[in-house]
Image (tube, rainbow, N blue to C red; front, side, top):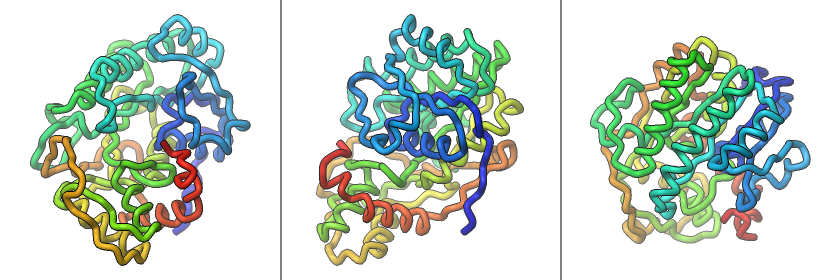
Length: 327
């Protein structure tokens, strides 16, 4: 498969929040590859294990999104042309502090947007979540009623709607990408796919919850392509929200079976050996027709190819996990 050549951020000054996370770290690498001048905002407690090999190539700034006065100074100093906002708290089940969830995801976003009002920027891409939708029974569309059932979903709903309102009210170039279930390079346990891959590579039985849970799994390279693609089409999509998923849901059993086959592991998965406190839905499938039409974006990698590439990456980088860097 030929790799698409995307040059939308070439020679641009790009700021990424949440750069130490799964999506942010992969997006950062793509921006560097495309010739961008990359700036990131981190805190003193940020875990930089995903970025150790690229820290010398980027500009790192220490700032807390909840400290508006300092954040404003940093934004005005950087003067980014494109801002990718991925910083969030609460996506993992162990991130339970409801006050921190609301403060980080809502007030952090509001502070960032207010700080960006002081500069001229081309585009700010906010990161939303499938958890904004809540429990549904049909493929999810951007104009569906939002009925989040988790604190994280509530916080992401509020930040997405604030971004949309500000874009429309003040004609600001803000777009939201509502991510479904990204997976791929640098993902860490206890997430499903890295946990299953590492168990299989070690010849162990993957420990799992329910085989019936479903998700719309989307490969990280396709997710990153969506961020790059929106930087080309963002001005004509001010205030818009786009689903970013593969467009088809798969069960946990289907994903684990594929990983077992790709790794050649003989150990049987241990279903029901761990609990899952999340409220589940029978439908997590993204309708991605809007992104296809307005962003000219669509996923290139099916589940098997995405998992194959992910397994190969984990084989080559398993030392990161054996050395417990990925904590």
